Length: 86
Image 1 (cartoon, rainbow, N blue to C red):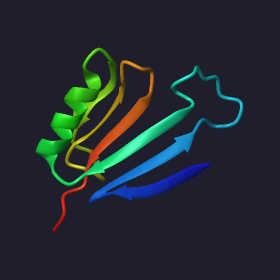
Image 2: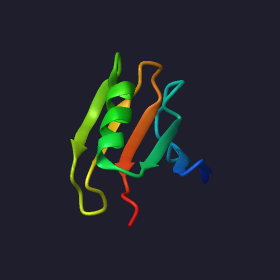
Image 3: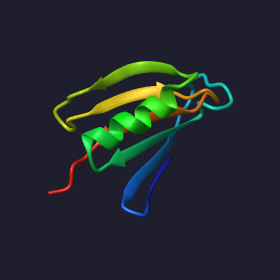
């Protein structure tokens, strides 16, 4: 299952684990956040990384100039993606 919603100008998406995949409390939901600038994505990623674990450093991808994955200090998995507005 998944959901998408906006908080102000920020798009957030939630998705659960695939059926049969192992999980622990905290990682049964992944939160994907779309941020309107590369600089803001770096700031958010840095804050989420503090006392957490980076699973994919911020980097340019074909869909985003700044995308990365991190598990925060509470065990919640995040995908941070810059989606600059035109």
